[in-house]
Length: 247
Image (cartoon, rainbow, N blue to C red; front, side, top):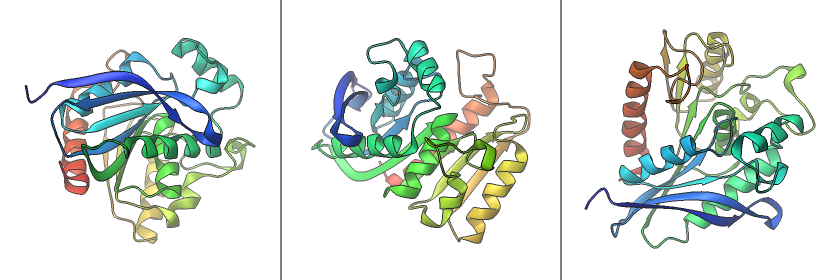
């Protein structure tokens, strides 16, 4: 069956050599298949994010989603771990990039991998996808309504000391941005500022804003879910990754 997939929890060597859980979803055919690192949203490493990874697998990608909240509450359910991460001040940027780098290394061990890899993130994961694409080599990146990519001094902290927009000169790959016109974080003004920064530095990108959508419009289990925006957004993701990752 051409859409047959396998999904399982694996351990990857993340930042500092720590072993962290990650959800791996992959097609069962011989490949070769492009890779995608899926960065979960602030609500955590939850069943809904694992379903996103499986969706990528059905469409012909090896998808790997590292649990960025693992160290804040080892073994806890996603909601508890997400609350612990928020209480601690969020996932440290350096640790996040180290974990994403570890996920990429793990993905590269698969014989069926094609050699290209993208990164996608939602909500806080959108910010982390942008951050990762500015600090690691990727072939394509997707920011789904990442808050605080554009950040002022009051938004910075010891764990998250830099506004990702300030790293734009280092962006390693083309970027797709998908946003809600009713969102407040990122607001339309933030999206415009990011668009301008990318253009200023000659970074290839395409942005799409859905006027009637708010934050988290991809989340099928939340009131924010917007069918029209999500359907169009998924199609743009497939087109974008097909162009830049192949498959």
